[in-house]
Image (cartoon, rainbow, N blue to C red; front, side, top):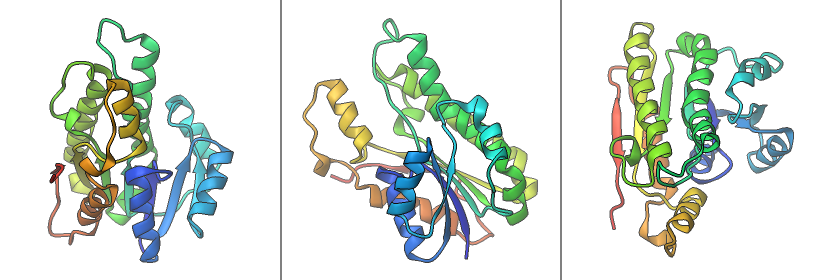
Length: 229
């Protein structure tokens, strides 16, 4: 039985991944921003364990995890949580920049640092769920795209550093996916939202499981997923 740690399991892609892993009997450790959210996740995923760690405050992650029991080994660390606030660079505030970078980039880096000992023990896999915006930035996507470009750099650096330790690192770049975040993005864009036009979160979950289930003789570095409609 493999052990997986997941951010963003409460909805969208993270929820789809957690469902798949729980169904097959794996051990799940789910990150929650507060105790109330942890209770909700525990009810939603019976048998899963929860950890309270607010990704909006990366400076406190070490303290938070230091006061909770962690698994001795981690087979996969799945960074799926993220936030998106759109707007032109000329109007984005430092509050938006700092919040976006904290959740989308700094916290994934810090969680990875804190859990590398367990990942090295199991020769595990780190998956960063990135975005098409992590490869190409468009107007009004400055803060989000910058955080995702940074996430790509983090993954590429980590891959080179941890190769000798047997830790695999995969970046997944989904196109627009039918999630609550996508509904919010459409609202910010002033567009009608039709989830049927976009990728089903379960399809992205399939690609993530492909990366973590790959035999040890291979590694997926980068995986791009685009809407098929």
